[in-house]
Image 1 (tube, one colour):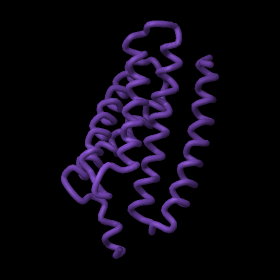
Image 2 (tube, rainbow, N blue to C red):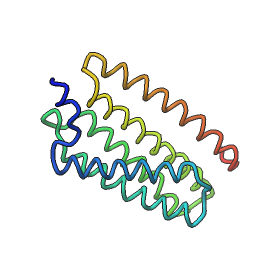
Image 3 (cartoon, rainbow, N blue to C red):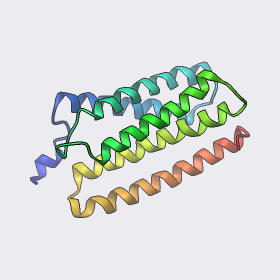
Length: 160
């Protein structure tokens, strides 16, 4: 693969659309992740994150880098599941555990989004023989840092 081909990030209109909403989801997700929870600002940013993630994940199914359904499409399904498992308890508030479910699923969806970012970087900038090592190292580091931040916030909020 030529060097310039690897740096060609967007291959189609659906790819451009997907890229735009991935950036928006990362911005809104980061803002929700690091701002005070339960405020009007949190809810507005949270809905912008949710909408961005829905569009991002649905647009992923229109991208076929390997000619058919791939591992990345499976991760898009997992991502959709995590945001639904996070938002539905907040909408329903059926029991006292709704906040715990909302907190963990939504926070882990943001961490998962950053892990997906590393996979995208790996695909675009590294040869396949290095791809898995780079992506695994970056993903594991991101997940470990995310886990520490989530645990710290859960303790602050008295969520167990």
